[in-house]
Length: 303
Ligand SMILES: [Mg+2]
Image 1 (cartoon, protein in one colour):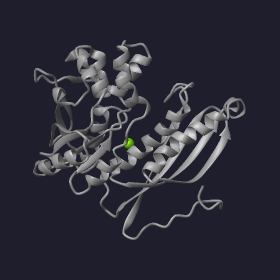
Image 2 (tube, protein in one colour; image 1 turned 45 degrees about the horizontal axis):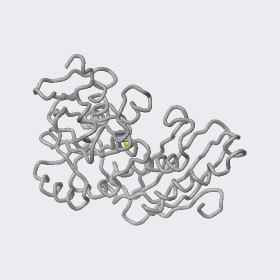
Image 3 (tube, helix red, strand yellow; image 1 turned 60 degrees about the vertical axis):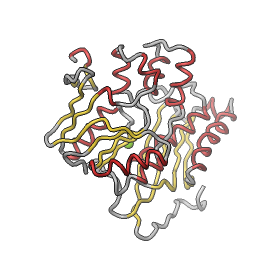
């Protein structure tokens, strides 16, 4: 845990800027109170790594503020050991050093601050989208939200289907390497934590641009495809959070480079639409008709 002093000291490498972000997971809001501690430790770092990925930053350091109920400390010391194992499995994979932290008694709450480095002036931003840019997403969308809908008994998946979707919810993969490789290729980027429509909406707002995407082009698993006729699956695809994939925009002239990157990283990168002048997001359904936005995400009933 750093130097053992009152604060951690870090030297900023020459020519670099620090990218700093924090994310808190609250019991009952972001995870079930009885969640597996290993997965919780893993996911709480993964969601922070995802913010580094969105900026094209290399994650370097983390600070952890853990609030633990007395019963977890007193009755079950294994909880903290398992949580740490999950956290450090991921931290070690990305060479992230834990340089500080704090533990307090209270309702279970996990706060992580992450610090990464990126070449000065080169970070990926939300504000750089240009008219004519392709809109890309990594991986597949919607499985995490679909798994959550199953857990909340809003939909019933077959046992093998829930087994396929659950890892997206419990142990998401932050696209750390992709983010760094997109510097110089992408005009704008964001990680999908709140759902594609909302997060692409953040790019559009910051860039003061409009976009049109086609729902049939959004990459999804065979499981999600099977339930695609149900409005809940469409919600998972457009408004489901917790995917932690990257959404980015790039000039059409970079298509070949991005396709090569996809092969190199063995990570699907899919074009789902285009950036235009103007404002707002249009989503076209399978028939090419515009679907209607509602305040939360998408109102499929008006489609
Ligand atoms: Mg984010």
